[in-house]
Length: 269
Length: 183
Image (cartoon, rainbow over all chains, first blue to last red; front, side, top):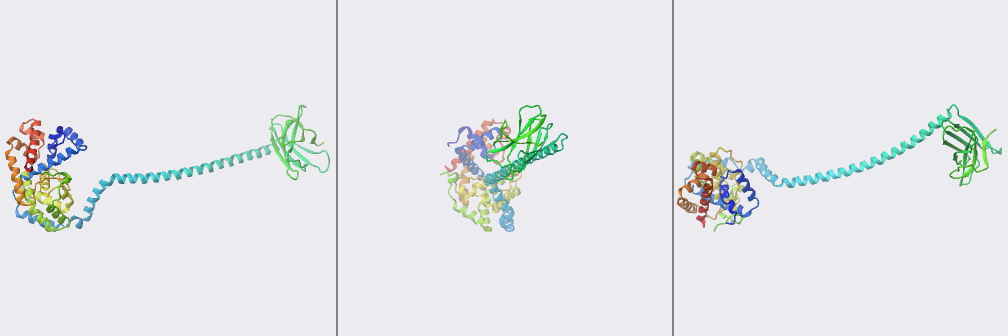
């Protein structure tokens, strides 16, 4: 016998179901889980108990016992034929126990794939939604800007100190015309131009505010008229500047900080 | 001589008998009974000391084998020792008023003894009895208390007054002595 000697006596008791010390029982079963020699010795000891059991043979059961069994067998055809559900259940239960870990792993794998696909779709939808949100926010910002400008134009036109002034060309025909509306309190200026002389590609018209205190002309916005010489401009500047008039010059594209002579348009009269 | 575990040879008679039972051949149950009823009944009667109760054990074990012949694997042992141990376990359950299990035990019992006919069985049984009768009375008594009365070693020590270690040693050496029957 190559089983471990320290477990030899416990193994013999265990083979008969007579080992009742919980600690000893637990230690032995744990050892049996890892020791093939002791498992083989246990099987040998069980064979020894079988011999012990066989020592009790001799008495024969009464004849009625045989008849009783054969009647029961005849009256109870094989379980799988008479009661397939019960048999099938027993087999299934055993297979279920055997394959349960495999089934659980397969189910987990399938579940993980489904989750991963769901997550991927959700992320895709989220990105799409974010792009839509950014587009909506950009549209909203642009609309707000346009609305704010429209409101400022309306406020300028209704301002108590709104000063409408028409500027005409120093030469009579073809009579270019510019109308401006300025509010010193708001620092806002609206310009509407018509019939202006077309400009080269690199030139623009720039408006200048001529302060009432005689200081240097202040840039009051620039614009480029369309092909027909018409243009419109809204310009925001520092509030509170009292203007005695406006003048228009031709400047390089991008505007200038000081007017370049000559003045091409100035207030009429 | 001793063969154990999965290396046990296939026993043709037992295997053929169980194959017929698996096929639903009711006459195979008659043959099984004729061959092994004495084994099951004798063990159950020894434990329970009641002919009626022993008959019930016979009935129960054979019917369960009829219902589930897959419980016995002819590749892993012989029917006689397998039935003897199952009869003992079922009778102990009955004695201790433990609820019977739904299925018969599938524990393999391997022994090199030829037990497939009455003459062979008698030969082995006589040898076993010879060994048992040769054991010191205290040792034989302890072995029988453990096996046929289903007592734990603590219960045996309590009843005999022997130290636990002595009970353990007697049980193990008694079983090893039986092993020599087939040596």
